[in-house]
Image (cartoon, rainbow, N blue to C red; front, top):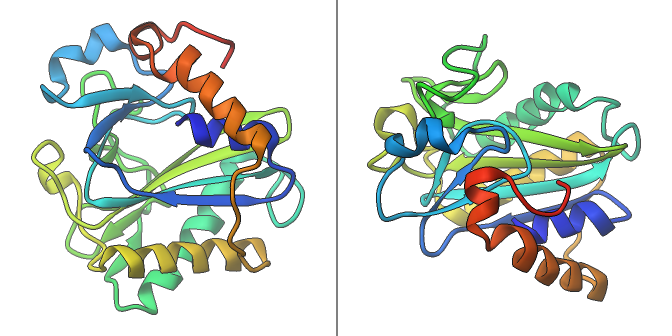
Length: 228
């Protein structure tokens, strides 16, 4: 989470980061109320809080992506709500070329406040990716600071004991799923992806954010810390 926010602060061009979680963890959406959902969270699992919205996600069998860019520039639309239809459709096409059985969710359903049902994948939004036989495969959430935007997303490779049938596998192994994500994002932006490393400024900001925000219980439970 700290790395992704550091990219939001510093990246000067569209930047995508893919990663997995070890050990598994659960992330809360920025607006989720800890007191309202604490007794619904799985026990004995590390919990972090994102600066992006949405519901709680069990991160284990998945490829997580973070995309940072400037709204209205270099292939990005002018608003956050315009991101999801085009981006998800492009990823759907890349998954389909690899044999995945994927559809677009036609309409938003479920608990959009994530209080009675805290699980993000139990309440698919319009244009999320779902399996032909049911279950959500991919969802995303964005956070804008001025024109800069961070998009978080999870592409599922399998379910977990908490989500159960709410999650469906995309049917690919990690590297094939990662390749599909990169291809879909690149096609949507209209530019190729090239490998890169964190800059010294991004590395320094990551360490600062981890200490002051993401490594604290005050952030996870109360959203207290530096201005998000």
